[in-house]
Image (cartoon, rainbow, N blue to C red; front, side, top):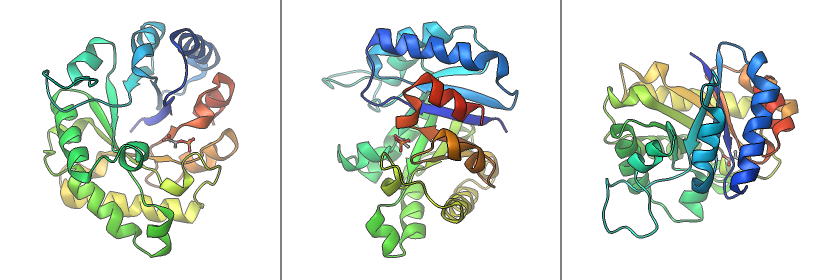
Length: 250
Ligand code: PEP
């Protein structure tokens, strides 16, 4: 299973800035990238074509998008379809990111609709799950992850799940500088793996599980080596090519 090293650039970077960072990353990483790793850059919509073009033909580098609406076309002002993302060069897309759940009020049901629709449209979907600090303090981690995975995968068949990736991102670790303890990551990823096997008895064991939440160059090596961690999803530390290249090669 290849490790997936994903950079979520959120609402940052103009087209020129995204192109420059993509080009710098290729220069820093391409000839050193181990065979068992791939790099996924997830820019804002406006820079998708630029990033996809910058990465075209570079082995091990992929382009992804941050969001979409689960319909093929129609009267959905401000939204974008999976086919439009693919047309712009994206092969992957995020669903259920904590900022969409908690800032944009996306429900578990909507996350489930989007996950099945994106996979059905042929994209690799990275379904993000994770508990808030209140939920962790109330010992509700297993319950929350179980609920988010059950709802997120409600309409996902074994066939569709071949393109599925799950990211465990504790909300309290995203953008805070606080990384989860190794023991917390091991425990949460084991819970996610068990639930995936329950929901997808055939393919659940081979769905990649990423960790996200204040991953930095100095903690990436340890995290990436843990059981049931098949990659990382990185926000802040992925914005600069130097820092993200050190994470990818950690
Ligand atoms: C994220 O946005 O998915 C994320 C993990 O952000 P950060 O690395 O900044 O915590």
